Image (cartoon, rainbow, N blue to C red; front, side, top):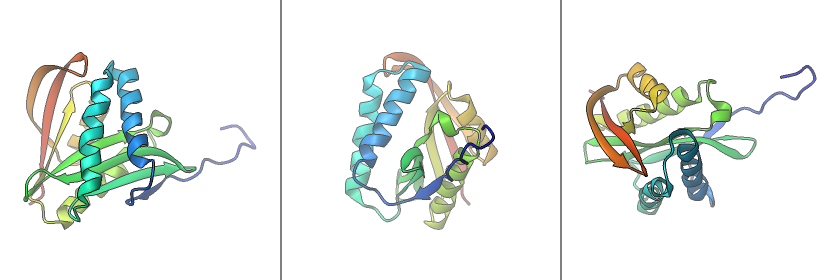
Length: 168
């Protein structure tokens, strides 16, 4: 930032879903994962379907956090029910323009606290090995890598990884 530049607006979190949010979060995933990891359009569809179902379900034990700066979405994360007792972390994303400022940790901590408050016994998440910074963040808050599976998904070769966290 140069002298005299206006300060950057604060990043705020909200949990209500507004018109355009599903499309924006889906598009962010599509563009970002294509640019950074070479994923094709099938990844965007992989995000869109379950995200739409999440919104339609309106389950009180599930929640999404949407991070905004200057009225634009810059990050998201959600907790959904994998089973009655197990939560799943989904749609975790931080815009590259705001990475390194602690937003990812803030989103992750909100999600874990909510899952704990809802009485889930643990949280699972699926990611790919290329997301090294995210994996570091997951392990720093108590997730453990449980499984790795080589696959061809979304137009590229990936190693899917499952992480688990006990909340008891």
